[in-house]
Image 1 (cartoon, rainbow, N blue to C red):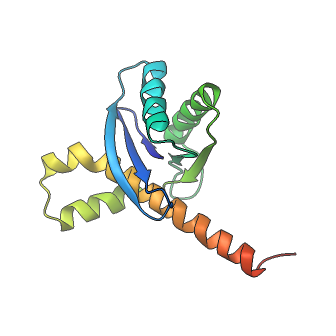
Image 2: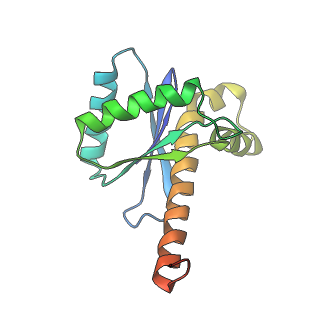
Length: 147
């Protein structure tokens, strides 16, 4: 499961069973109750038999941790306290811009983009994470980069 955590919404994406492709699922409105938001996410995770949760960490372009990344860290810690599912943080720089680019190239109106951007960003994030994880596993299997 991939999450794009923002101030107003949380974009949610899921992968297929083999972890090959990601697809947008929903957007959860941030209503001021982190317990309710996490409960809603964990309900989806349970229904979909999620084995790992990937949360986008919005580093600054220079790689430093900004205010938004600190907010996401707080959310991640709260999520980790409420589940046994491993929660991984993954650099999400530029995922929202990539999602916006995809929607614009698909001819989506500004209004429609606002509705789906967060879950598409979560999908882009999850895809990037799965691709990196797959590459790392292939390198490990081939014996590359072993000391």
